[in-house]
Image 1 (tube, helix red, strand yellow):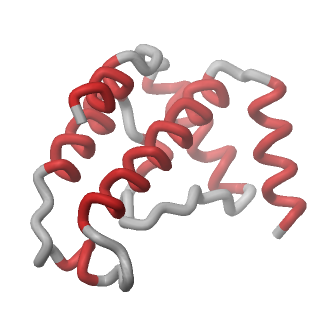
Image 2 (cartoon, rainbow, N blue to C red; image 1 turned 120 degrees about the horizontal axis):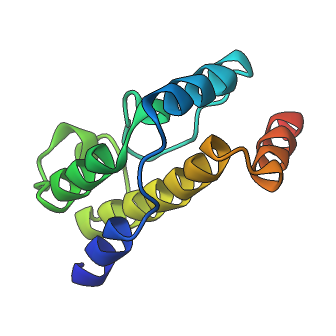
Length: 115
């Protein structure tokens, strides 16, 4: 898990508060919300500190946590590992969106067209 924490620490630095808010609003207007195993409230407005705090919360989860118990047929370690992978993927995409990366926005449009 130490290597995973390092991956989280190496995500891009925060965009400006204005860019974070603008991107979140743009995504919300398209009804885009990334899918996670465990709910990540307010994810579209998270910054790097929020992401790191969520990492720490997830690795400290216990088997009897409500979020874990709601997921059938998966062990705690598997749930946490998959959730961490989803978080890092979606957060890196979010960072690209905040930078105005056209390829990242194309990915969002493709996801929305598939729904």
